[in-house]
Length: 555
Image 1 (cartoon, rainbow, N blue to C red):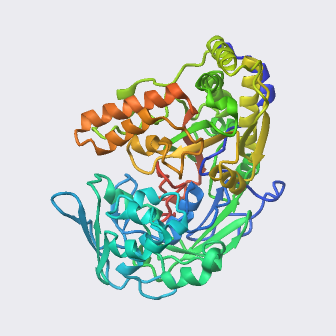
Image 2: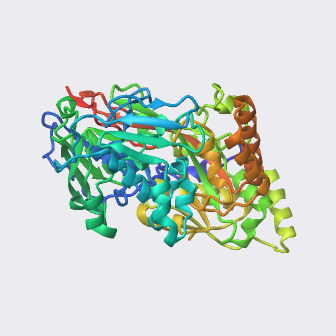
Image 3: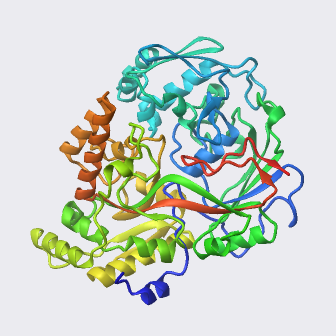
């Protein structure tokens, strides 16, 4: 390793904490308090948790971030809920779906007597209305592409205003009666039952949503669900408080009576709160991970998550050149990033798709694909940068902004990459740390030059990492990458029924993406947590959510 570690250590002294789903923070980093109870042991069946991000609006139609999914999953519920093994269990549904022989029609029976948190009845029509609202173009749902698997979904999502109501009536989701939901797909989707546990597939209470209008999901009194908990208080950028929902169908088996979630961006403050018994669960950052090695409180969260740098192809003209993009990615020492910044907790990336994701053919994708990402190579990076600049008739790379979240750890990540680019390529950039909600807003509005983000899988298949970069993916192709050969390959894989052929197509697609380098992966994330030993039944999911609390009890 040729990295000057003294330079890096002088520049970077803390761990990376930026999540695509996000890291936000406490409005007062010097205030170690924030828990609803006084310092000391949590009272019976209450849990206090630190969360590094303020979730945006708790609206399951438009949610895109892990913190938002996490809270929505606690206060609402879908037909199924994933257990500790990541397998779907009946939730609002009475049992697993009845699936037609051709894999297209799912018939699902709801439980008797389901209620919203306010005690009003929940019926199959609440799912129909929610799916129609999500697919309505006016909603501008980023995850509408998942519901587009439903027959007529794409037609609704792309309908003209005067066509919307007719397309809603034609959508392949019907309430046969109050307790029977029928979903017809455009094509078989092997993991569709698992997907029905995602918040995008949760029911919505139509009259409540309509009453709240554009404020729906923005505050505690503008949220309603049918999950294990209900949101009692939301002090923005400070704290969310949830209490047990007595109208939940399985309330008898929910042990926790209160959940206090503190929004804390500073990792030292967060750890201090844990060590002074003000919280029961907090994420460990950087050298904090090493401090807890061998301690019973250490818990690892192995995730289907990749961190990467996005280069906006249109905002910065130089980024239209693949050699320049590749040079910038090649000049970042991913091994040093993991060791010095992440404390060795994660895995340096070797492609875009994390190692534990399956290939759709019963094998791990990374083992099938091998290393598709360029290695750290300063000399090669300098040569590529020079070639790219020459092709653009430029003598140097104009200064641009590198954006991420404004947590202490995310800011240190920006500093690390800045130091690498200056030292290895002579390229200087301006760092732009932003509050989580603003960073997400700017990202979604394509208002950035280069941006450090993460992507977490929505299902255990490479497609969840690869189809987002298709040229017609207006929801997540934030860099506006456009390669017809890539589009054709991903579309063909999406329709391929021969699983071995499909796997190879996805491998080829990742190789093409890594060669074009619209994004430069940094690491596959593993997140260490400190958890009080008396917290039992906590699940740290590999996908979509920070934690799952339904089965938690305090021993």
